[in-house]
Every structure is written in structure tokens, then in C-alpha cells.
Image (cartoon, helix red, strand yellow):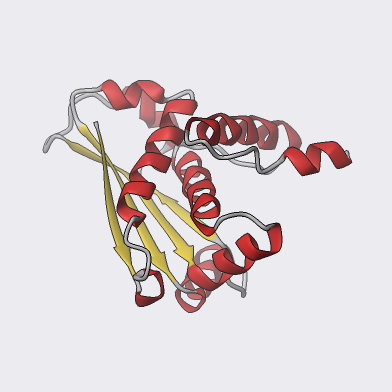
Length: 171
């Protein structure tokens, strides 16, 4: 079972469906991954999502990644990827997969630039962040291709078009 805990800064308040969207996106990501069986285990798997702003994400990006600029999404895994398959029952019946934080201004600007619905872009970023929590990365072409395929499959289950289709056509 998946539990999604969500907090949102005031910029995000005008759209009230974020908790449901975050839960569906995280579940779709896990289901599309090689760790889909985690959803049927005997404990609650938890993902924390914080909808924040450029200022906070900029600070975190600088502190944890050494990049002095805001970014769209950051992920902070709480379980080492090589330990995900060994999760059985936890002491308290819950396992925190990790934290995802999104920057409102950057996400909004990207959605506008890509001409996609803001909620679809946010769903994509939560899927992307969830996959990072599961150990997926895009540091090389092979890993990037694997992660993109998971994202495409997860987004398809949410009725969201392939965000990489235009890139593939230009290659």
C-alpha cells in the first residue's frame, strides 16, 4: 500500500487536487518500475511530496548538489536502492521511500514553455522524482533510456502523453 503525504506553499493553494495527483503519480511510477512489488507488501510505503518555491529548492540544490540555481524537482531517497528488495516488515509497519520537492515558479515556467497542462507537468515531475527514490537515474544514455521508458509507461497509465516524443523525433 502506498501513502503519499503532501504539503504545499501558498503558490500551490489555488489548485486543491494536488494530494490526489501526487498519490496517483507516485503509484504510477512505482508500478512502472522494477520495484512494482513494493506496492503489494505487508507494510505502508510512504512518499513525502512538498510543493514549494524556487527559493527553497535553490537552497536545497546548492546545499545537496552543489548547484547554485533552482531546479524543477529534487528527490531525497531514504532507502538505499540495493536495500529496496530486502524490505519485508518494518518495525512500525511503514517504510518512508523518500522526499520529493518541487519549485512552483520553475515548474510553471517549464509547463508554459512546453505548452503542456501544469498538472500534467507536475505529474511527470512527481513520476520522475519517485523513480529517483527507487534508484533510477539519468547519468548516462543507458540509464536515461531506462528511466524515460518507465516515465513514459507511468504517464500513459495517467492519460498523459509521452513528454519525450518531440525529442525522439528530432534525433
